[in-house]
Length: 399
Image 1 (cartoon, rainbow, N blue to C red):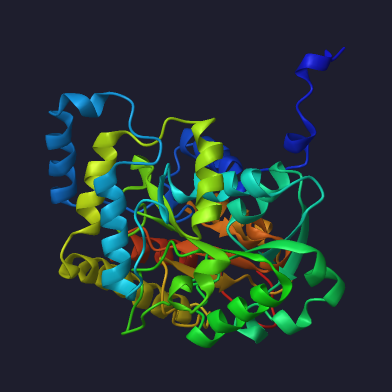
Image 2 (tube, one colour):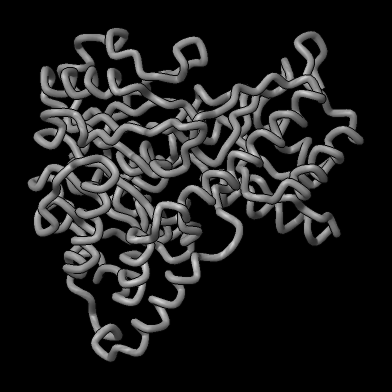
């Protein structure tokens, strides 16, 4: 007999299994069996936060007031650092008091934005594949999803002209993300201009995830949605310090843009949390003020890993495009092999962990995402194991 109070709310039962939690279970089981795992699954940067960031946190610990509740809207100095960062990087001037809000990581903010603005039955446009928080947040809020299927043939860009008129007239929000997780796709400025024109015409809120802003290579400079004239009237943009500054466990990010939307999210969050530990905000403020050479070092680290792994996979039959940004490779599965089966085969036969593409939506089927979160020696060991297991990519023969 199952008691009524043990039955979870429909909003939980509507959620598909969270693949990263399932991967953690499989990894734990593999470790129990003595496997030396090379975990390239999650986007969890290796290494520690920069020394100046750590030192700023230590100094902030010595300030008694930092051990109390922080301001709901974040510390004034952190919000000012966010605004200064946007002006320096994108020539976008923000009001730190109304157009910037610190978050407990961007995932928290992306999900809570849906709770703040999606009513049951509201239609939300979400690309597939996409970062899970983009579709799980609206699902938790009771929204109806319309999946925009992306493809390699379209360079993984949204084709606004392909969205049915009946759908666009109902849509309330569009979530999107370039540079893209998981596909590594980048979008030209013209795409963002088209997105703003589309949203203005149909009165749709744009929610852009710019979490990989600094992880760009070979001279490529990502575009901020807020660079586009009029974007601030109908959109917000999320960012995180997890990736560039190796602060994933610190849980700190922010959202900027439309003041009314940010006020709505702030109102919701005042009823759910007490904000970010002031010590973490002091550290994050320092991170955003680091000299540019630090970011260049991070970019070079990921560029070297990208080139090394693409070359090694090429020797095994894969032709992987040279990504312009992010910390991932988006790699096709061998023909007639599902992404789940391929990821499980790699784990069981080699101890190499990757993320199946279907974790990011149905249109991610046929791919796996590989995170560049290990040094080249470790990536070389992963390639050696794959080769020894006889796993190769072939257009004709499935593995």
